[in-house]
Image 1 (tube, rainbow, N blue to C red):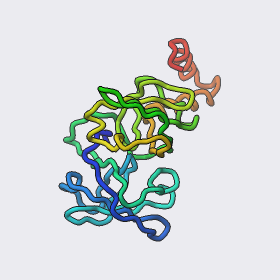
Image 2: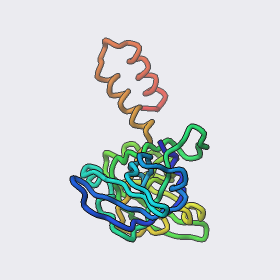
Image 3: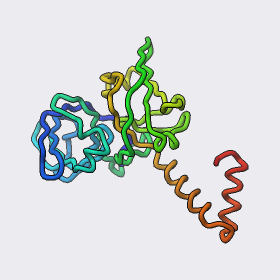
Length: 219
């Protein structure tokens, strides 16, 4: 489990084929503190397991599936990536619940800087857009963000200067592919609603609950 608050920006120094996947080596500093082999680190929002360590870098094995459903498969040496270690029971929780399980990828559309920060538009497929709501939470390349608005193509975001300086969002340009993880709560609610609808008249309590949600505008 992660918070989406990026600890540092690392740099990929090596990419090689390894069995049915790929081996990534990332130069880092802060996230190496206290890290051991087997620990989890989020790389641009994708939770990966550390397979080896040096005093200046760590390596992970990204499976063929991970490489195909995330942007990791396109990464090459020199790319900067957002890094965050998994939460501990004593961690402060300042972002939102981020699992590190990327739901899919999107692409950067509009990028517009102003005196206060940067606006960005993200295009996403309908299967992801249905979970996106204005002022809701979303993780893009592992960054915990608040949705500014929902658009026909996807959604828009805004980055304050601190977010730009501490994440790779400052590198974004039109056409870049980014990892998207939607809010886990939205997926659980959808699952519950589908189960309730499928039970029909035999579940009076669930039907009443569903009707109340509809009446109150939640569904």
